[in-house]
Length: 190
Image (tube, rainbow, N blue to C red):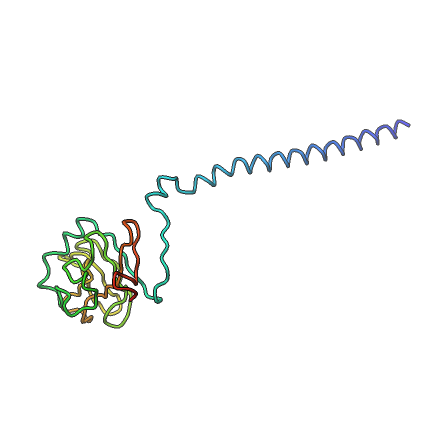
């Protein structure tokens, strides 16, 4: 009989152990979830950050790369002073809407909107916005790595570049102060 009592005690202990092990695992899993939720939420931007950099909806426009550059006052200042080095400084022979036929080639100083395709053979010019980045007198702009065309911060092409015209400016508008609509302006769809 003593053997039977020992066996019964062992069965009770095993079932108790299984219960305690299961309860501990379940409690640990629930605790891990509660601990992980604030940690994972901390990766998301705060409301303030969302307001400053809210998501932007950009529809695919004719499968063409569009460059939208937010120019700083320093970048705008570098647009002037090198007209003698440009092929078409007044954008008379280039493709852009009438409102972009100015030294900045844009509706506003702050935003530049360009079709991001080199007018030489269709490569994608890369940003080289820092003054002096390509050579000592470089005012900043775009550089096409395929054949070496250079464009300033208004998309105007430099003399000596294989590209014959400035980067193209698509039709665009600002339906409200926080929205840029590309491919359509007051005259309609491009």
